Image (cartoon, rainbow, N blue to C red; front, side, top):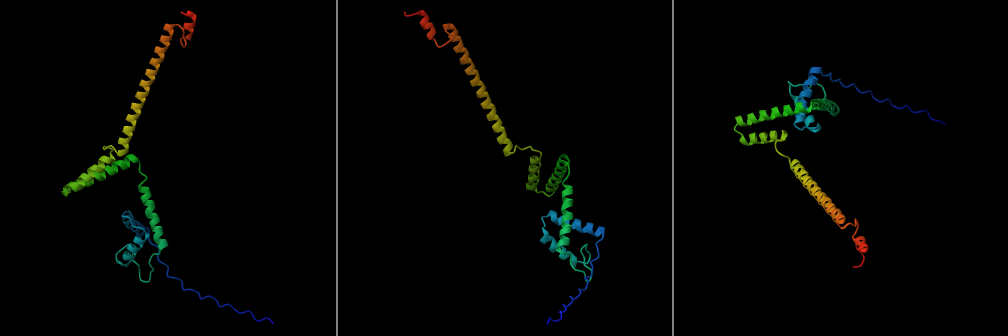
Length: 196
C-alpha cells in the first residue's frame, strides 16, 4: 500500500533586507574622487575596503552609514574601483606633446619648491630628471648606438679602401698583361718566340 505523500515544509520567507538608499550622483562623485586619491597612492581593494570602513564610521563623510544600513559590499566597492580606474585611463589619453609640457611644468614646480625649502639634493634630482625627460643626457643605449654607428662607418670605410685596392691591383694586372702582350698567363708569348 502506498503511503500518503509527505508534504515538504515550505521554506521560511526571509525578511527583506532594508534596501540601502541609492547614493546621489554628487555623493558617488565625491566617493570616486576620494578613492581616486588613495588609488593613485597605490591602494588595492583591501586597502580601499579598510578606508571605506573607517569613513563609514565618521559622521560627516560621503561614506557615512545611516542607522541600520549595511556596509558596502566588495562587489559595490569593486564597481567604484572600476569608475576610478576608468577616470585614470581617461586622464592618460593625452597627446604626447601635452603630456611632456605637463611633466615639465610639474618638475619645474617641484624644483622651485625644493629650492625654496633649501633642499638642494631634491632640487638636483628634479633637475636631473627634467634633463633626462628632455633627453639632454645621452642614455646608455644612445651612447652604445653611437659607438655602433661609428664602428659601422669604420667598417664601411675599410671595405671601400679594400675594394679600391682590389680594383687597383686588377688594373695593374691588366696593364702588366697588356705590356707582355699575351692577355693571359704569359705562356702564349713564350711559345710564339720559340726556343731561344
